Length: 69
Image 1 (tube, rainbow, N blue to C red):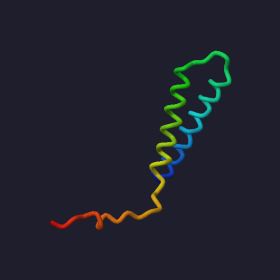
Image 2: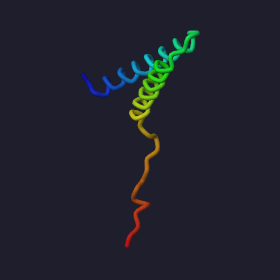
Image 3: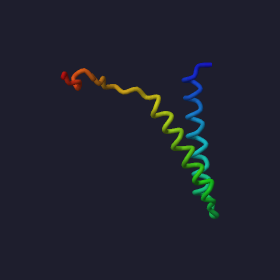
C-alpha cells in the first residue's frame, strides 16, 4: 500500500477520533478532562498530518537571496 494513502487515512482517523472524544465529553454532565485532553491532542495531530501533506502553490526562488562575495 502507498505510504501517502496510509498517512491520509491515518490522519482522517485521528481527526475523527479526536472530534468524537471532544463532542462526547462536551455533551456529558460529568467532565473527564483527561479524555478531553487526549481528544485535543489527537485532533491537532491529525490536522498537523493533513497540513504537512499540502504542497505550497507559490514557488520560492532561493537564487535571488544569495549574495556574491
